[in-house]
Length: 286
Image 1 (cartoon, rainbow, N blue to C red):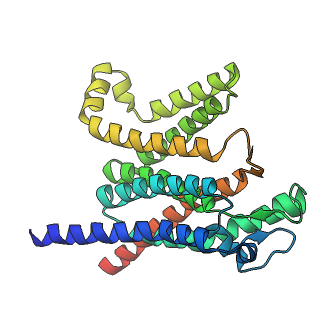
Image 2 (image 1 turned 45 degrees about the vertical axis):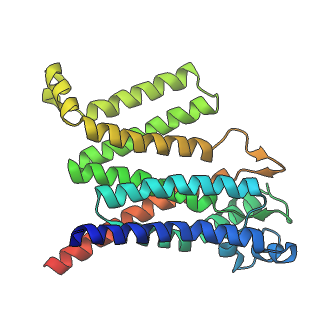
Image 3 (image 1 turned 180 degrees about the vertical axis):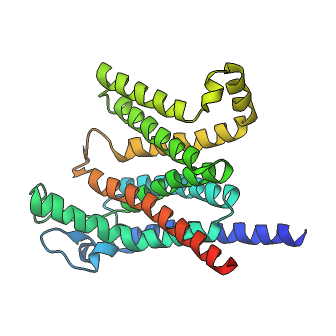
């Protein structure tokens, strides 16, 4: 085994350990918390305590709640690792992003829920609690979306990367309207028009005048198109699960606001960390 291959094995092993450490903590917390201790770690809207804005993210109300978040975590962490390690060669950047999400997403979601849903809208009772890892899972979904853009930027250019991300976002809206059964002719027409506009943006004007050139370019980049398309499908499906039409389930509610905050925070954090990493590298080279 060569030096480089040995290094890759070590890095892959480290990725596995780091990836498994988070669900291990979630499972241990779930099965080791007593009822009295459980009430101490969840965020209660009528009695908010600073420490619970973090601890509540690691507590779950049921095995079903835990299982769904673990499934979402596995999907997003695998997708993110593939994008960042295999395509971007940016493992460190990925794990820095994950750590930042673990620090900032729980307080962001808790505070925004408290201000918007509890204090302003009055939709939540004093005894209601906030708990679960779904905000961070949503954040990892945002990281995956940003990763798709980074890969396209690295292989092509910034404009194509931005167009690709916008294309995925439009596709995600389309999936949401279908899964939530709110697809009307008007929405269909608007989404179709928007997708066509973004699709044209991905094609050179000279190619539009020569259809054979478009076919050649598609064939030339077929592998990348399929791979990026696969990641986009994962993001679309994840978002459709994050924002269901029926938000009341099993005596609780799906906190779509926290999911939205987490998703946007994940994408924004990924961009900030990447830009900081690129700036650091340019300073070191200079």
